[in-house]
Image 1 (cartoon, rainbow, N blue to C red):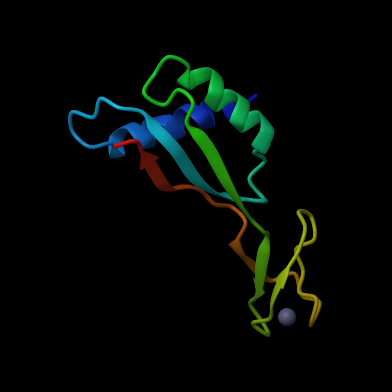
Image 2: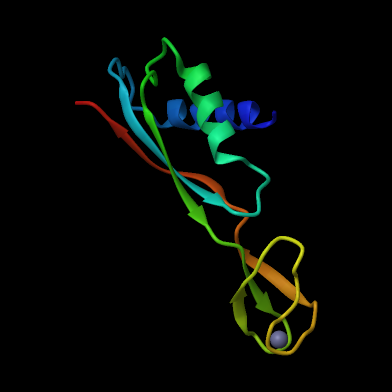
Length: 114
Ligand SMILES: [Zn+2]
């Protein structure tokens, strides 16, 4: 379950962004999570809960904003939504496409208690 190591990465990022001398609790952590990351949101949530137990992140809500898998055609520049495994342009049929969204895993917001 690689979600546990991803959860620990997230926790590390949160800690680095907490103010100096922070001795309160983190309320929530907002994440941008691409659909094409092989991360199972439920497993990530579970890993996060286990790893934060008894820490300043204990009870913090992990809010995940799932971003769809989006590709852009290198030939006709058409942008379309797709699914993993279907990497071709729906307009002209080429497989020369770039993934422009769907691989994100980014902490975008941290909310703390005053
Ligand atoms: Zn195209």
